[in-house]
Amino acid sequence: MALEAIKYKKGKLEILDQTLLPAITRYVPVQGVEDGWKVINKMQVRGAPAIAIVGCLSLAVELARESYLDKSTVRREVEGKMNYLVSARPTAVNIKIAAEDLIKETNKYYKNDDISVDEMVQSILKFIEGMLEKDLNDNKCIGKFGADEILKNIPEDSLVRILTHCNAGSLATTGYGTALGVIRSLHNQRRLERAYCTETRPYNQGARLTAFELVHESIPGTLICDDMVAALMKSRTISAVVVGADRVAANGDTANKIGTYQIAILAKYHDVPFYVAAPMTSIDFDMSNGDSIPIEERPEREMTHLNDQRIAAAGIQCWNPAFDVTPAHLISGIITETGVFKPESLKDLVSSSN
Image 1 (cartoon, rainbow, N blue to C red):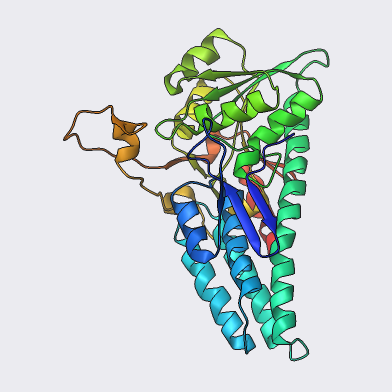
Image 2: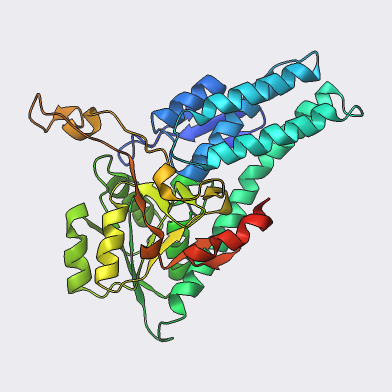
């Protein structure tokens, strides 16, 4: 059974505090937008799809609790608070797209004179709650398309070895996962020999979270340090690399957890297919290339301390970007809920995304 990162019932939201994993499993109540912003910014919830959903659900908790006298107030609340939530983690595009979609939907209800203020609020809540089920279904489709893509050039009786970076599993989504969803699908088909996960310094999402998921679901997994990727690819046959994404530009350039770019370079050198697994909401068709993707910089303490113990020399300056951008020419394919696309073909999807 997959881990549950988000627990929601109308008017009540809890998230699994991922800063405490794997040692402690604790759910944190999110009682409104301020709480939503904090748990996203502090990375108690992370992963681009989960960030978008938790942000929207934090607003849903407020909408379900408050009473509104007129529709214009509801509209202002939705627009202002969703734009505020976007600022919590600026690199991930999913919450920006979710905000735009929700504001557009809210304006539609606002302009409809046949809808009362209460009906408007209930319609918004239904729209937000629908994101949970859609994300899970999208992840399962990503898993199937990704597994099929990887296996199409593999002999039927052969097992595959997959490398992943950071965490793009059920902890980063509403369930199943994107990159880890592909691994899970391969495992369910009994075609996975082993999944390798990097520790993903400095926040250790691979060591703390992906490894935790693999063990929890009895998927054969091996943890490696970030600086072991080249040695792994040289000494063992790796069938493919599959990673998630926080934002994909229109030309296929992809922002993901720091360290992804160098893994893509190593995969190219060792002739290992490199795939990005992400829902369509991770594709920013308004951004022509990856040079314009905003890169969040995290606090120095994430590098200098481990479990509150300083591991770096006092006084040293640090540079701690949370993400890097992998150029499209290093990416073999982008796995979405609608199929697998070459980076250069994303431009053909622009019309279908509008």
